[in-house]
Length: 201
Image (cartoon, rainbow, N blue to C red; front, side, top):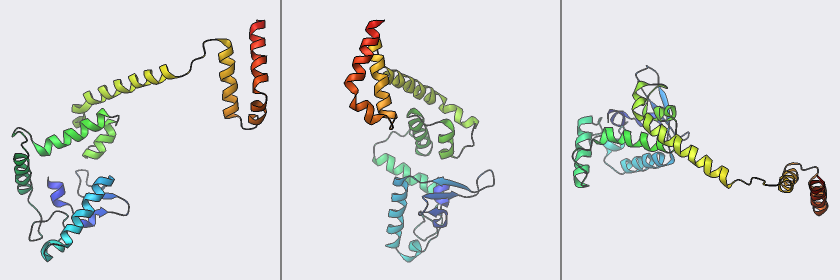
């Protein structure tokens, strides 16, 4: 929670949908892309603060205290804990950590790479921290392979020479714009020629 507590409006670029992550461990600023949902939430937050007291309205922080100062991460955790209790979420649930795991596992299970997810979580490519999510990559890869099988099964595969030549001729009609009119005009004749050649063999 320390990062959202430290987030300032100067770090948010709505025009380019980017949040600039300051003072990273590498010592370099790091741009993070914002999704449409995140952009919408932050715009709503800015509108909300504009209707609040001047201390909050003029605060440089995106999620300030009521006096406009920087929010304490411990207070953030306490607020989130109270929300979980009201929502009936088990006490064993650790919001700050479980939320990261949920985001990572969901993205990986739906085809994102470890490097892509590591970028969102703030880890460098090849980081050992990402090894814990490897099992989700394997399950996603299996689904992709199975999906490829289904796609290939549904693809038209010619069974006879006539079907092969018909499919080849159709591909020429689609791909070769120079001969498209001619082929379409003599379609029946071409098919008859193909069948005659095959039967002759």
